Image (cartoon, rainbow, N blue to C red; front, side, top):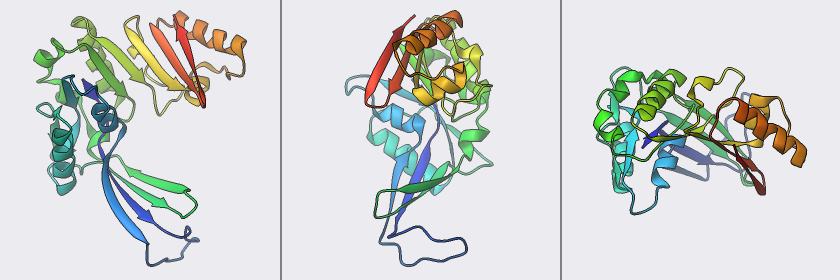
Length: 227
């Protein structure tokens, strides 16, 4: 089961980025694609697994686009809620000919999500093995979902991104696997990973906080910390 953000990503391809106040035209190409951490994690599921989405869309064209895209990838959208007041999350990407990009994100329904998204998920929670989420949606919702998962013996996986010192540590417990990169890890622990010793210190930090398993990605390598 995935709890997270859904965005429609619209990309403008340009030769170069505009200067402040400058209008560039024409863009060489424009494309739209399904996106958002929650949606991306959902569609990466093994082909034979049942995957359920706990996300929030608006009743707009972007919401229909994303719901159709998830269903085409065999994601169960029964528990995807509808936000009556906010638009579906979107991201506007500008990509230059050198491959550099800048991104502007409208959180919309993602940021407006409430615990109501969980109101009809109890039966589904009883039959899933994992609940995966990140902090692209309100942390209060993630915490409530983790409590529900723990009550049903479900393993929880947390990607605490975007990370900050106030990230919801109440989500961490012995049934939680923490997946984060080295920058996010340093923000949470205050420990910069530069060698095996600092990697061990990071492992000890998360172990002391009650995390079950921590996986820190290190650029070209991966550090696996078993607590």
